[in-house]
Image (cartoon, rainbow, N blue to C red; front, side, top):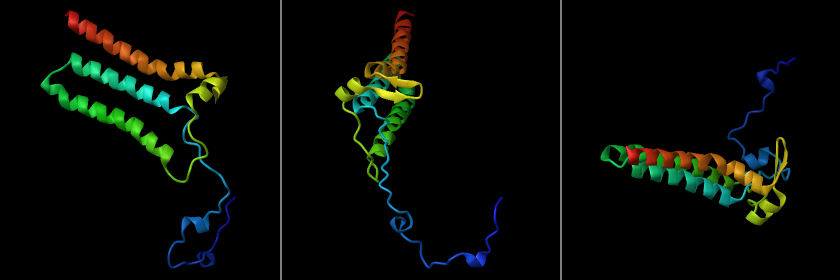
Length: 144
């Protein structure tokens, strides 16, 4: 059960204290890279931008400039915000894994350890399928 604390028991301060004075440093560092190499994120972004390029080339007309620009901005921000998140303070515990370490050790998932090649395949499967779908749509439009 909760316990009532009277207002008179609270300490009044003139200005808030800096966060460093309030929260003790326990030596805990944040890990924000998801233990994945930067190259996988770059490959994913490149595949999404390739899809947008295919769609822009397939449906190239004046009315599609603004929607394609909006899509490009959204995809760009979907990768720019996490990139900024990895670099923000306080410092994170480790740098993202290198490609060789990722392939050698893999990653730990909820269902158990997964090799690097398998993790890369899982991560890139959706963007590759979306690009393939875009190419199929472009082929259909070209033949009609």
